[in-house]
Length: 240
Ligand code: 6PG
Image (cartoon, rainbow, N blue to C red):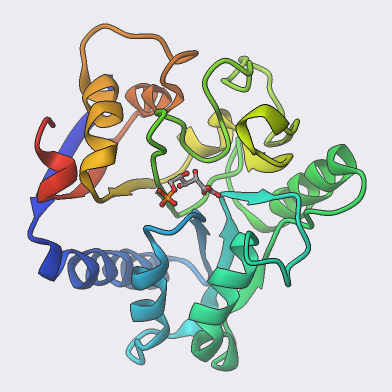
C-alpha cells in the first residue's frame, strides 16, 4: 500500500511550498534525463501553484513538457476548460520553450482519448510509459483526475492509458477525458494537493483502512508503489 507523506501547511505557505517541490522534482529529473514530463490537474485548487510556476525563472523550461491529467469536453475558450487555465498560468514558461499538450476535448472523445495516448506513448519512457511528476487533486466526492465514484472508471489491469468519461447531466457534469489509473500509478512521483474544509471527508475516506475505490476513486493512490506526497492546508487536513 502507498506510503502517504502527508504535509499539512498553513494556507499562507502552501502555494510556495508546493511550487518549490515541483520545481525541485523537475530540476532533479533534468539532471538525469533530457526532458521532464509533468501532468497537471485541472479544477480551481492548483491555479495559484501554476501561476507561481509561471513566475519561476530558474529552471530550464525548454526541457519541460506539460500534459493534462484530465479535461472537460469543452472548447479551450470555455471558462470550464482546464487547458485555458493551465495555458494562461504557464504562458511565461511556454514563452521560454516549455511545451504544453492539452487533451483535445471536442468531437469524438474516444478518438481524442486514443490520440492523446498515442502522443504519450511517443513521448514518455518506460513500460508502461511513465510521467516524471503527476499533480492530482481530489473532489469533495472523492474523485481524482476524472475518475468519478460509481461510473466504473477505476482501473482494469489491461486498461488503456487514457479514457473518455461520459457526461452525467443530472450532476451538471460534462463528458471528460482523463488519464487512467494505470497511467497515474506508473508515475515516478505522485503529488496530491487539496485545500479547504469541504475536502476533509473525502480525504478521510482516502486515508481510511477500509473503503472501496468505486466509492472513493482517489483510493487508487493506495496502490502506488512509491510514496505519495499529500499537501493539505489546515482546513483540509483537519481529519487526515
Ligand atoms: C477537474 C480535475 C479534478 C480536480 C478535482 C478538484 O478537471 O475538475 O482535474 O480532478 O482535481 O475536481 O477540483 P477543485 O480543485 O476545483 O476542487
